Amino acid sequence: MKDRVAVAGLLVLGVLAVLGKSAVMLVSVVGMAVAYWGTRTVGLGRQLASVAAAAVGAALLAEGVHTVYHRLAPLTSGDDTGGFFVSATLVGLINAAAFAALMLLAEWVERQRAAAPRAGGPDPRG
Image (cartoon, rainbow, N blue to C red; front, side, top):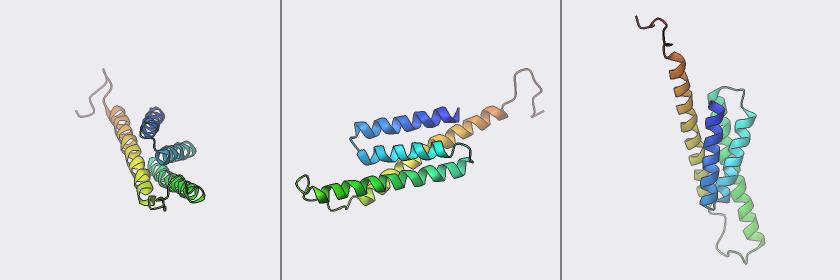
């Protein structure tokens, strides 16, 4: 179930990036997806830390590429001096926070289901 929730969350973030026309956000989501796939077998805490680091790192990398592009092609935007790195960091952190909240909720639901008494069995509460 956790993998399905993760994929659904990443797809929603990807769609929001496309609708918002944010290449930085989309690159951040792709970085998150790669980190999630690469850490499928580790614990949730380590997995979320890896995904968060990838989200911020990918967003900063995308903003770096964007800044270099505008430096090499000054006709496209004369005002872009690379001052958007704070925004890129925030995009990565917001993506990571949304994904972490979703994954923690999925983990909580999974634990609640596992702890629920089975129908027809003895009630563990007495």
